[in-house]
Length: 168
Image (cartoon, rainbow, N blue to C red):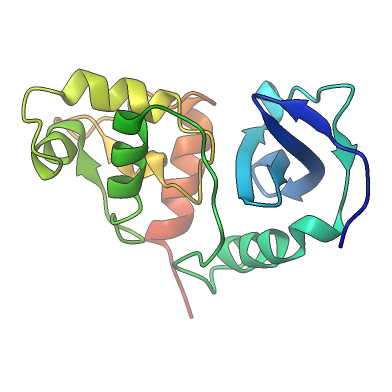
């Protein structure tokens, strides 16, 4: 069992590591219950009390390596996202969007039986603490435009470009 001292943030002990990906450096953070955060380089904020722990994230790193190498379409990881019940419901629905597919905000709203909640879906996407693995980048505007990615539309475009050019 890992006996390293970790910080208590939002009531949870968190460890972290940095992962260098094709879309920039990512911060991975989590606790014994699972991965809680992936932050893109432009958003990285490491609490001074967090504990660096590469070993906790070996499986996450392996699966991200496979994703970026275009050999993995789905993730099989223990996740522990923190959010409201509504946000968690949206994030669960996002995980049903298949690799290389996109959906509109209104489609997600219909799928969770909240047909008038398209804007709220957008806000839940914006608060998604585990992008890529909870694939909020796969949600686009009804007119097909790339909209609403918290870490920038260029990263969203890179992720979608990767997925739509999948080769095995």
